[in-house]
Length: 396
Image: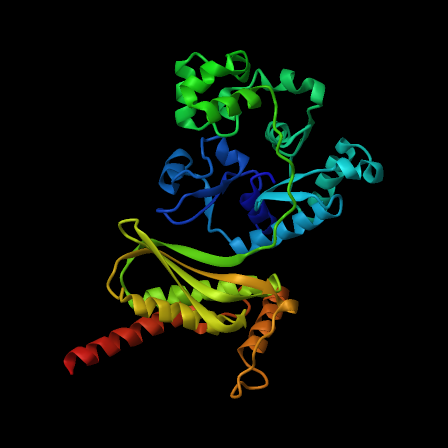
């Protein structure tokens, strides 16, 4: 996908098309995605938001909506599945497709690629770039060269011609440190690297890394495309704009994360038995703790109850916290799970209520139905009540 998160945001903000747009967190967060107009100013994914704002002060900064991005990604992957069963999701916005077995049905690889691009653009109103090559490595580089909104095929007999003029930074596994070391050796292009004896590279980078670089320099990649594995866990996390030590705020964010996680479970038709809470402190140390529910669940209240119990047992009421997360693991398909009903469980409860909420938000938007405590008015009322309770306790 081309500038995936930003492209999805432009679907609902067409007034921003053609302008620099950055998707990211608060001033303490990082850039998750940027339009090509923002990239012209030097903004890149993974860059601190403070740096991005300095480079492009006119950029429109939008908060991320991970649920929407995940839904669009799932729809795009479903398009890929129509053309080949061998689809390997590399990330939320990228996948490898082995179309060898699809050529007789859908035509050449170029025809398949152009059809994929057209279907994604028509169904999702976003663009994608396609790279075609004899292996994953070449296809990856070809897709990058095709961006934005393009297609490039690199046949097997043209791999060397395509690769050797490229800078060494384009190779998989070559980060800043490796690139700097290659430059010190006088190797700036892939061609330079290709014509360096492999033993020399192994002495400089080690036996494994040296051999790996030598293979990639000649376009050799023996890895196969592996179909997607079943999802094993579902979760959400939140990094705060500032470190917090207020238990009321922590519990509210745990509820928000539990709510998001439960919604994702229901959309994926999954249930889970293990609830895991992750906490990162102000000093960047982290811890995780887990608990098991009696029956597999996708209900917010049940997930939240476990998350709060974990947080309470940790005794972190005044610890300064930077990030919290809630994850549900040991997931199974809803159709394969048995949920033990309780004797006191009503005929209709939270599960049915949340299914109704899902239907409403699907039809009217994500803010159609919200928990009161997670709205701005609810938050203000909750904090005021907590402060009042604190004063009464102190006075008593």
